[in-house]
Image 1 (cartoon, rainbow, N blue to C red):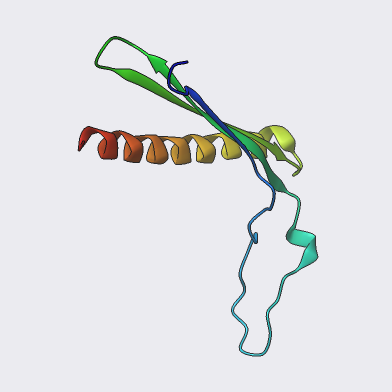
Image 2 (cartoon, rainbow, N blue to C red; image 1 turned 90 degrees about the horizontal axis):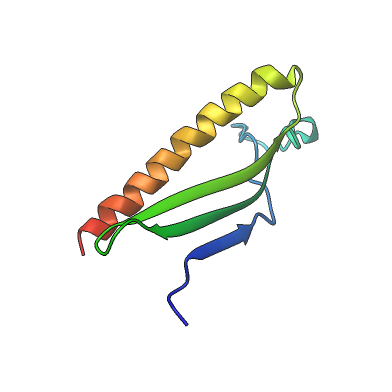
Length: 97
């Protein structure tokens, strides 16, 4: 059996959508929940040649804001930026070895 090539994970909890500064108590407005829901993700390793490997990151999520086509565009843009940051960090760390 060869080395694993796929890491999949489920998102069990969503982060707090916004933290408000309040000197008296913790405010968690329920109307902010559910607009962006991360569902799952994966990292996939694909050999390019004997010395190189391609790492692909994928995220599944839902956008529940109207108009959806507008907010989906922004969500895709932001998720793409996050993917690039994570993948470049992994690349930098792996090339140090």
